[in-house]
Image 1 (tube, rainbow, N blue to C red):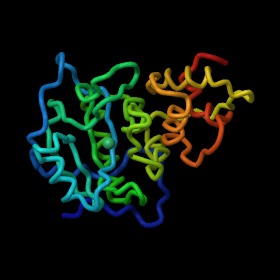
Image 2 (tube, protein in one colour):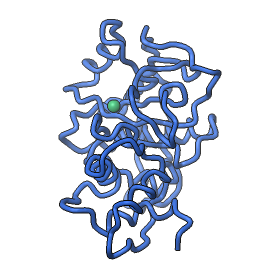
Image 3 (spheres, rainbow, N blue to C red):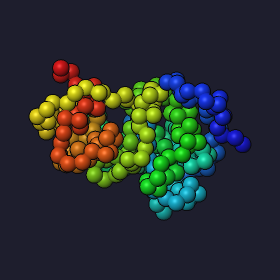
Image 4 (cartoon, helix red, strand yellow):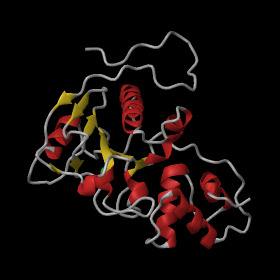
Length: 243
Ligand SMILES: [Zn+2]
């Protein structure tokens, strides 16, 4: 079954939600799930890469009771969509970490795994299905763009997925992730302000300066190297009331 409708010739891509129809997920149940605690509903969507060679290997692992991991969805490199856990239930994908000052991310999120080793770009069919899935999830659960995060955002230093190859700007242009600010960062680059801005954006504050900087760069400017720079502040400035 064709998963991706071909776009019209040389038609330019416009800033509207993906026109790809969301394929019906292939139901492949995992035993690795439980009830969401305290009756929570999904308010976040956490994106991952599988770091495995192929989707079948990932599917096997995510459904193996020995490993005690799972996710709600897996999108293969060719755009195949599998569902392993009902959206109402709590999948085991996020682990230790926090976002917006709250832990137990599993109880308040939907986990989406992308079939990718972490060492190569994400494919077009996969991204198109991800866009369609995000559009559907965000609409049905009333999740705003800033509720779409990477695993590394909520677990700095411990996780690095979906990694430097993931095209966050593409999601931002479609309103499927928080649009970054392009404000000019302070020339003296004070670390205390950086930590405050990162925390306001949702990043955990219980990590050291270096780890936090690495996590923010992984999300917004993975090419960034060296000491904290004004450019590291720019994408975060939208969260600040400061002028
Ligand atoms: Zn992950």
